[in-house]
Length: 353
Image (cartoon, rainbow, N blue to C red; front, top):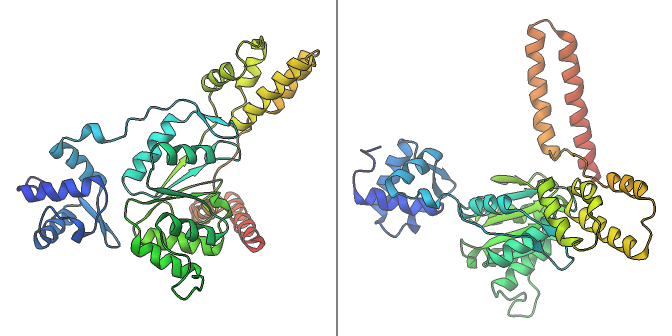
């Protein structure tokens, strides 16, 4: 490594690749021929990896860059967030999630926020766009034409030709790819509803070097570099929110049942119902109302997408031969049955779409 970084130019190239992936021509601190020679050395030592026309530091390269450039304090952004409130008064508290998402976006990694309905994905996207991602566009995955039109409006691209004809969707997309800067972030909500055209648009945007931030209950077969799972409230977070929602109302005895509701939207609705019932004088049977709150408590669900289940099915098909070799045929048959059932359910779901 000392041989690879034995000049100032080596450090300049290392610093240029540290912030974000870049094309070789975009590195202006060193001339093109020197940059090509240095990147070739870095690639040979396993410090740089190539993805299409973009070069980025590997994990080994980032670690060495931290030592050589002294950037240990820049590994993760420092985020200060409190409870976030949107128009519908749905609260979320996600400091660790915000940190992880911004950490991935700074490194040009397309990121997907996974979570069940009502967990605050849309609220989180609005918060990120408003406070952190100034050069970004927030769109829904459906319809596909909505993505290109909003991107065109953001980039001041006309929607009609000089002859007055409305541009087609992929004509607009070509103009967007030519005009968009590399720091533009496309935020796509409800990824699970993505159509075939939406998937094509996302792939073309990713190939052009744009970063995608998505949110949904599944990836819908779209390739994302990183996935962040939106968890439910812990008891401490829920208690803090409950104090803000029902403070000075004398309903502390219901706090334990409310704190176990991990879904933010469900928790907000439960607190509102409790306050209304308290004002109307309908809280006569406390035991009955507590049992009703228990029915609202968060149930654990599996957030593995159908495409992940197919991968698991192939793994089970492979593992069956291990048990066949040990003459444990019954376990092998069971694994095969489970795997083929996964394939059947996956194909049936795709046909419905």
